Figure (tube, rainbow, N blue to C red):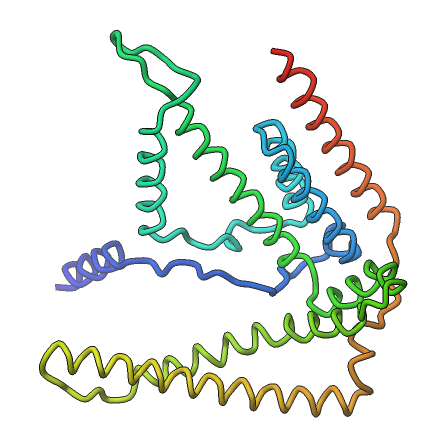
Length: 287
């Protein structure tokens, strides 16, 4: 009897579906590393520079070199594999459909299989765009996993200091960005609690397709109204807290400057970018 119970529980554990890892945004991974201690402005400059490079030179060489930099940074920051979110099954299906559709377009290069010419241009372009998207997502994730939210606003204010000569309100923009980044995780938690509470309410059983559709619309309207109420309440509380602490000027006033590790990172990024551009323009173009 005991052995059968143990076998059934083991079978249930094997057959049970493991919950997927959710997407965690704007929450740094605990730890102390070179990447964690780096100035937030340096990370923003690196992300901007790599994005600018991939805009004008979205080749395989550029994608490969920048991906290597991101992987090295993740290794130095000790980012665990558990920080990566689970990819849902429907996304794999969408990617497969997109790959098949792009492969049907053909194009150079072409290969011959049993006397039939098959163009690989569309498939290679789809793979390149997919790799480029994953790289950009990885850049954003690295900033999110290794940077405290409170450091973004002062970094933006410092980087945008030359724009003050043009009468651009850099400090106000930095304070707005800092408030948005701080409020985003809090509002996500509020909306999750609100949605869970809504699901616990008993639903009215209605008959007919039109009545069920109307019920869904009413539930959506109620959720939006509740979300707006929660957002306004949180905004009012945050405004009172900011006023009590001295105003929005404190959000963008944090005297942090680049250190040796920041300059080394910028130099390595520039060197890798120059190498990618040189290989794309000189060697690959000539051949």
